[in-house]
Amino acid sequence: MMGVVQRPLLPFVLFLGIFSAIVAGVHYYLWQRLIRAPELGPTWQRVGSVALWGLASLVPLGLVLSRALPRPIAGVVAGVVYTWVGLAVLLFFLLLTSELVRLGAHGVTALLDRPLDGDRRTFLSRAIAGAAGVLAMGLGITGAASALGEVAVRPVRVRLRRLPRAMSGFRVVQLTDLHIGPTIGRAWLERVVARVNALEPDVVAITGDLVDGSVEELREHTAPLADLRARHGVFFVTGNHEYYSGIDAWVAELGRLGVRVLRNERVSIGHGEHSFDLAGVDDWSARGMGRGHGPDLARALAGRDPSRELVLLAHQPKQILEAERMGVGLQLSGHTHGGQIFPWGLFVRLDQPYVAGLSWHGQSQIYVSRGTGYWGPPMRVGAPSEITLIELDGAALTEAIA
Image 1 (cartoon, one colour):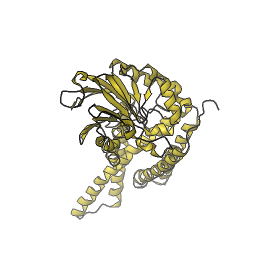
Image 2 (cartoon, one colour):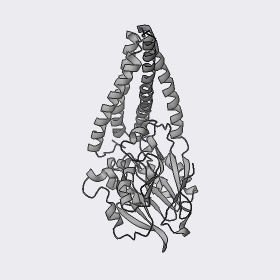
Image 3 (spheres, helix red, strand yellow):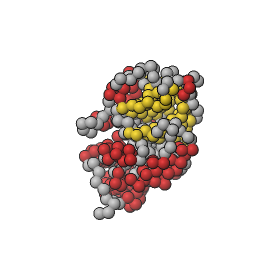
Image 4 (cartoon, rainbow, N blue to C red):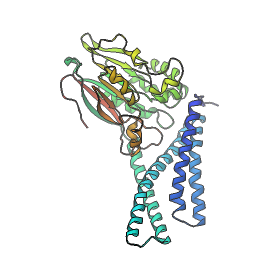
């Protein structure tokens, strides 16, 4: 069929299985609190149950169809599915928070020796369900406006002790987690490229998760990357999503677009004494993707003069653990999306040492971008997207300019 492409299957099947289990658990909790507890009556309970479990089934089915259908249709399917996923996540966390209200109500009535009767319990359940629905819808609308609107430029100034003073003011624009795919396409990327070029960067660094799809499917939509302009070049390192989408084909395609892919290697940026080292490593998750894949920082830094400043591009923040030991001055990362939908960032901290912003890790610094695009739900709640303008400084104190 025209427009249908084949993608690596095993990683997707594993992801789909885990994702489906999580979806089922979340929807069971939603059913308990939105359908069963409010006691809406037999008819409305049946209607609500069918609707809720229908939406739950649509999520994994939609993910499969979004891979199998031609892009225009796949985009619509993915948009509907992911929008519901976003609303379900908001409902889930709001209802979890409401458990405190329930505990408080039961505590007060116990102290007064006036336990809640059936009618009052039903009223409380209905009030909580209604409030959660209204709040989730409001947050979903504002979150969609944030995710789909203009991407803000976030300026950050970073002092690097080994950076030649003559290079103070060097401008690195970081893009990360663009996730060009079913719901993010060419028109959006063209706007991002125009904003980046207007910043007149010295280097553009793309720190992974650029695409969600194959080269055949997305070539037209990634074409604007060829229009990126930077005095010392455009560089890219892989994220975990590139390995779901045909990594070798994407490395070749990015090279064709004029983007230098750093795969466990480094380059010198600048001229003569007025220069520093820029290194890039494969994504942390690529270790299990076969021979020739996986991060190898030692290889990237082999033979390096340790007196030179070193900036590392690495998709996942956890790669700072090795980077600090290897003398990296600054690591640029993404992956976390800043949590994307609050309070998901609290759970991201279980896997990553840093979620967003500029931090010290020992003698190294790390900047974690909240991401330029979004993944899954077209929503950002409490974690706005960004194009990061990093100004390197060999003299001034490190500071973030919000």
